[in-house]
Length: 364
Image (cartoon, rainbow, N blue to C red; front, top):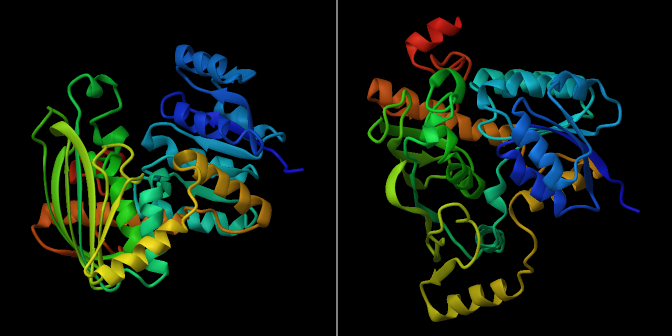
């Protein structure tokens, strides 16, 4: 009989989607307790998802010995400390994006995890598990894609004043960044998931849509370590919301759907250069067995990793890759120069990508 893992959830916003993912994995997980400072939303989620206990004391979750996992779905500025407490209390940790506020914190968490080798930290990148993107990964693994040339990614969404009425949004101190960090990071993770790490970025960023501190529009040109190129655009000022990923290889082009929040899902279009190669692609895709996607699939894979003692499906290094791109983009915007990666400890933004005045106020 499969062992159920017990989860304590912290948060009551995006946590609702996590709870849906756990709900679709009822044989693998149960959620006995939810913690949130927002009593109305927290208790409403407890009622909706049949959670027996509500609390506003996060430390009480770390102190319990009947929980296997702490799920962190709080504002970004709280992530590192909550993750640290979760790991040091002997529990596995799931944490929403963006994982942390600097590459230094990612590396410090790596050192913490090294002291607790049995514990796993899994960042959230649920878009990876859409069937469309998984089919592309299958074709690459099968050798049917060929040499990578160019990737284009558009994250064109709409966020108006109501969105920023939430006190922690739109501010460097609490949201830690703008659309590059909080919105396009999923699509940019999909770039790394397909091609591996980035090598260099040149970036323009601007605040054009709302009167906020952080960027809501950006354009990036990227060199990948595998030799291919990518162009990434992000805006929160698109009245027609779309997400689009387009991967050009020597032997095929893969194009996503345009739905803004599920662009990894089918139906993707895979186009070969010849009829013969199209037949090979079609044959490979016909053998693909679809399954769950999104949070449901990521949580399912985490359960398997914990039971088998393997790495989680999304690792700390995966989060580092995505945050390196963000860090390098911010540095390029401020210097007007291309910025190489990886980001090492001697980089000016290693300890924080916040603007200089914000870093000074935070003592960074």
